[in-house]
Structure formats: C-alpha cells, structure tokens
Length: 300
Image 1 (cartoon, one colour):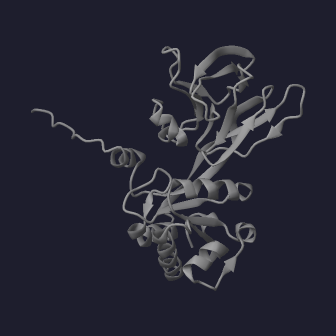
Image 2 (tube, rainbow, N blue to C red; image 1 turned 45 degrees about the horizontal axis):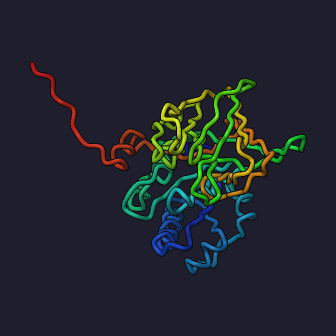
C-alpha cells in the first residue's frame, strides 16, 4: 500500500502514439507497474500502438475505472490528458520518454522504478496546479463555458500582419486597451511556456496568481503584470473589424465574434500532479533553462 489512498487503485496509462519512443516507453511502464504490484489499464490507442491486448479500455471508460494516470510524452500530451481527465480529478504522473525533463513530465523513463517504489512507500506528494476558467458571450447573449486552460489562454490575430486591439476590464474597472500582436493570460504552470517567450515572468507553480503578458505591444510601457486570484477579467475586441482568435493551451482555437466578451478567472478546479522528492522545481528550472554558476564560498 502507498501512503496515499488515491494511488492504491488501478493505474491508467496514456501515451503519445505519434512518438515511437513514447510507445516503447509505454510497454516498459506496463511491465514496471506490474512488478511493483499495481493493476494497470491501457488506453485503447496506446495499447494498439504498443501491441498490448490485456487490460485495454477506450479513453472514456478508462478514466472512470482508474484512480491515477501515467501519461507518457511531452507537456503537450499531458495538457490533453489533463483536460480529458478533469471531470474525474485523477492525479497524473508525467513521464518523459526522452532524455530531458519537461516542466510537467518531470520523471524520466530510467527513473521510473525508483519513482514507483517511492509511490509505494508513500514518499511522494500530490501537487495541485491552478487552471483558468473562461467563458465567452456575445452582447446580451448567454455565456458559453470554454474548456479550462492549464497553461494559458491566448488572444491573437487571425493571420493578418496587423495589431489587434483588446479592451481589458479588471473586476468592474477599466484597465487599459492593448494594441499588440496578442495577449496571453497564463497560469503559474504556463508561465514557462508561451508567456515566457513573450517576456513574461517565471512564476512558481504553487503560486496563486495569474500572469497577463502582452505580445509585442505597440506601447512599450505595456509590461507583463501578475494578477491575484480574486481578480476577474473581461476582454473585448476594441476593433471589431479585425479578427481575433482565442486559443486554449495552444490546442483549442475559436474565432471570436465582433461583439464577444471573454471572461476569465482562476478556476476552483485544479489539476493534480504526482511529485516524488527527487528534484525540486528550482533544479528543473536550472536544467531546462541551462542556468549556470555556483555558490561562492564565503571567505573565512
């Protein structure tokens, strides 16, 4: 038995079937789970790609039959799995089949045996990552809930080489109008994704805040800003003649109407990640971002 009852039940395995190394890793993971006494279920596409016939279930059935997930692939694979499994609240162990860590897939395949041993002994923790809840409504229309975002919600132009104009209201108060290539609202988890490349700050994943990062703003004083959980946000198209596209985690996209208002906030829903005490978030940052240097010794 593990030290966490959530992790004692059946385990679901989902892999990025478009990556040969992820499919091969899924076979290794199934064997490792069996050796450590875990009951394993495979998502049907993963099983088909891996040539495994036992313990197979379609994704919808799988998510209702397991108590946690092993997701094999990069951060994009985990984003999709997190969204699919959200109604079930399943903790996720992200396994990267390559040789480098991901910010969410922070377990390497060669570390899996020791990770499973730690889970069995209770030497792990479940960390909750914040998500963004968003809804869109036309003027005088009924709001439509959008899928939650684990990384970010992004507003960008529809392929034209033109700035978009977005009015932003924080709470009930007008904040500013952005003329920019786009606007990113990122969770702390997403602060190391698109927002970082646009000049946004790195925010520790357990921080209860939201990052607003403009993409190439026309006004240079439009800088990234960190918003508290209590802040609600409305975004409106300030130039209705220009197309604005909304993207959720870079995976779900929709065209906004000229009268649409998008409302965002940090959601009450979180995504659970299994973290074993092998390395800290600081160590992952140093490795992923190739930070160098050493602590200087104090002179006696």
